Image (tube, rainbow, N blue to C red; front, side):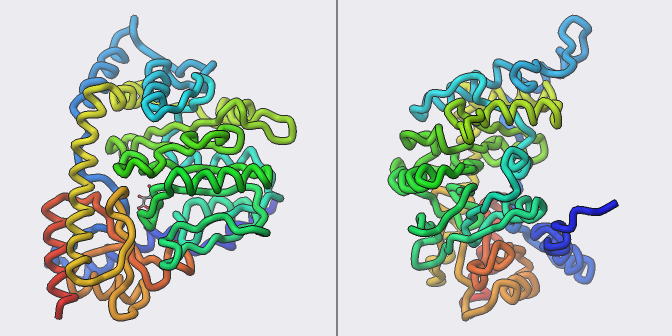
Amino acid sequence: MKINRCFLALKDSYLFATVGRKTAEYKKAHPEKDVIRLSIGDVTRPLAPVVVEAMKKAVEEMSRTESFKGYGPDQTCYGYQSLIESILNSYSRKGVSLGTGEIFISDGAKSDCGNILDLFSTENTVLLPDPVYPAYADANTMAGRKIIYADANEANGFLPMPQKGVKADIIYICSPNNPTGAAYTREQLKEWVAYAKSLDAVILYDAAYEYFVTDPSLARSIYEVEGAKDCAIEICSYSKTAGFTGVRCGYTVVPHALIREGVSINKLWARRQSTKFNGVSYVTQMGAAAVFSEEGEKQISENIAYYRKNAKIIGDTLDELGIWYTGGKNSPYIWLKCPNGMDSWAFFDYLLEEANVVGTPGSGFGKNGEGFFRLTGFGTEENTREACKRISRLLQK
Ligand code: MLT
């Protein structure tokens, strides 16, 4: 028996697990301290009332023989029509037309960002930005794929563009970006689409934070770029859009136009999902279907405005302190330069010990993240204001 030795190339623990462990150790040693976590991007607002109502109704249906549901419909890989239609409508509002068979319901973006790799040879080269959401890098390392990096840095505003002569088969793009909060314009995405087409590559576009976009020049879907349907898969989530981090629901778009080596990638994904996945619970899907209703959109935008306000509070604090940052405007993440030339983990310790505020060290997202630090707007407003007061006091000294 042989294990998959590629796992041995991974760091001992996942970034957020390391941050969680260090925070827990500090709290254990200092139980009297009020520690504020602005580290992992986990939401704090409750589910929108329309979502709760829809879920209650679905539970009721499950309690009666005549309306009880077992496995979901297998023609759509267990996605219910009402949910798929609400997603198609949300795309129409962005000017993107898709068909029922192109939407696959999932338990969230993180799983599909890794699972989708089943469809592609391990001989493919993967292009990731650096810094990068660690799940993309880890999932490809587990499969033994060669990873190359596009440098994101202060000079390019943490938005790397395609480089001539760099060849890749799979390209991950996350916009608005985790961890940097920077977001591509439609014009910039056009260049990525042209580049992918020139290489016959496939873009895996993570749109988990699209609902934070307010600037009209920024894209909310890769399919807003003409021609993207034959080179891109879009992976979306209700986690940050509608507070589903604990509920678990997302959707992945695999267009029929996406063909490689004469094979429909859509058909491969349907085959993969019907074998390895049994769908998302009926109750969850009904809750998700309410998100893109007229009332649902209104209610979730109130929650998003709340997180956006938190991000602004953090941004304003950094502006007052004269600290460079990206994000925070069309994104819940603020990516800041550590003050006084501190490295990322040194700043993590300093902030934890001196201000009892937890963030995420930039170096955990890649070598270009060294010297940077991520804070999130997903806390409560009260905690965000308090954390900012403490950060100001500490860094103004
Ligand atoms: C993060 O903090 O980067 C996110 O919570 C990660 C995720 O959504 O899995």
